[in-house]
Every structure is written in C-alpha cells, then in structure tokens.
Length: 162
Image (cartoon, rainbow, N blue to C red; front, side):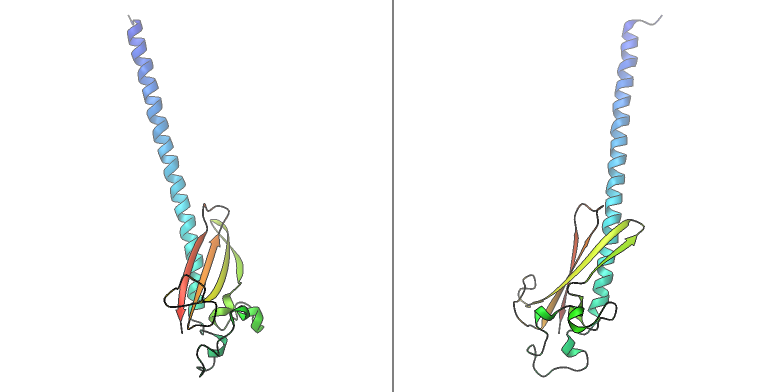
C-alpha cells in the first residue's frame, strides 16, 4: 500500500525533473540564438570585406589612375569631390578608391537582407581614426553593414596609403 509520504516523494521528483528539463531547454534555445546571431554577423563581415577587397585594388585617387602626379598630395581630389557620381562613374565601373564614398547597396542572402554603405575620408598616419580635414597620402574606407536581424551594425575599416 502506498502512503502519503511516497506520493509526496513522487510529486517532488516530478517537479525537480520538470525544472531540469526547462533549464536544459532554455540552454538549448539560447545556444541556437547565439549560433544564429554569429552566422548573421559572419555573413555581414563577409559582405563588408568583399567591398573592401574590391576597393583596395583600385587606384588611390582619380589623379593617379593614369600616372603619378608631381604634386602629392596637392593634386589629389578634394574630399568634397569623393564619390563616383562626381566623376561621372557608376558602380561597378569605379576606377579609384574614393569613388566608393557614399556608395550604398542592398544584398539579399540566405540569411536575409543586408544594407551596405561606404564612406571614404582623408586621414593622417598618426591619427587614422580621425578625419584629416585636408588632403593627405592616406585614405580610410569605412564599410557599415546592417540588417534588421542583427543586434548591432558591423563596421569594417581599411586604410589605404598612397
């Protein structure tokens, strides 16, 4: 015959087992969420790096597409003239690094929609994180990749010396 103490032990064991199952389920769900987020971030980094790889092989400036100018950095483009549209160029026919300034596109992957924007600025060797405010022999490309599914935007930078 089963008495009350045995019944309470069985009920207690069921409660403890239920709590353990819920904790395991919560851990599995959190792990899947982190894995998905990491995959989304990896895709965003790959898209941004593709744009950087494309831009880094271009000429430093419109003035250097055919020959090396004698007046460096004076012959380089003004920073307000950056962007392919200022030279009458359109993507993918950009011929120099600063043509990517203001460039935007959207890519759709198996992980969703990503928005990619690029900006180019003159920087100095000693302060590559700050805009120089004038012509120098260094330009920095910042590529920002965002998605509605990402918690944060991904920003990648590339410093191009002349």
